[in-house]
Length: 270
Image (cartoon, rainbow, N blue to C red):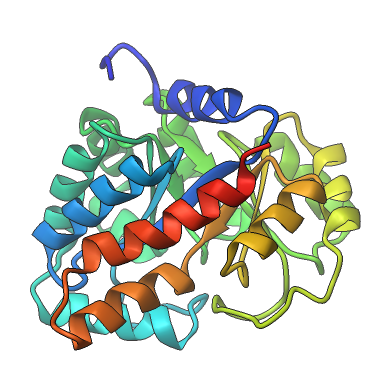
C-alpha cells in the first residue's frame, strides 16, 4: 500500500479486482476478544480470501446491531477497546486489506469531522460507515472525508424511497452499503426476499459499486447475493459468532473466523 493512494482508490481497486464475482467484505469487531487478537483475525481474513474488511468500533448503544454484535461490542469495551487503539489496529490491518471503519457518529463529532477524517487518511484507513448519520446532516463529514480521500459510504434499505435513494447515490463514495432487510444485523436462516429488485434500484441511483449486507451468513446466501447483482457481500454476525464460540471453548478465534471466510470466498469463485 502506498500513501499516495487515497482510500477511495483502494476501495475502487478492491472491487475492480473482484470483477466477475462479488467482493467479500467480512466484518470484524475491533477489540473482541482483545485488540491484538483482532489484528490476527484480520490477517486470517486476508489469508482466506477477503477483499476488504469492515472494522467495527465498539459502542455502548449500537442501534443498528443485533444481539451477537452488541454482545461483542460490550465485551470489547470491557477489555479496554477505545477509539484510539481501534484506529491503531486499523493502521496495522490496512497493510493487508482496505479497511472501512464502521463507527457511530458521536466519536466523529467529539474529535471534529476534519480531524477524524485526517487521522483516518494518515493511518491508511480507506472508508467510513456511519450508521446513525442521516443524509441531511452528512455534509460536514462528507466534505472532510472528500478532502482527505476517505470514502464516506452510505447505507440504504429496502424502505428507502426512490427520491432519497437518488440523493444518497449522488453523494456515495467507495460503494453503497445496501441493507438487505429491515431491522438490525444478525444471521437469518434464509434470505427469503429476492434482493435483485432492490439491488437494481440502488444501482440505478449511483455510479459506485453496490454491496449487500445484513442476514448473510453462509456461502449459499453469499453466492445468491452475488447472483442477484451485488458487487460486494458483507458478512458480520456469523463471523462474530465464530469468534465468540472459539473464545468460549478456549480455542484460537483467528483460524475459526478464517475458516468461515474461506467458505464464503470459495462460494463466490466463478
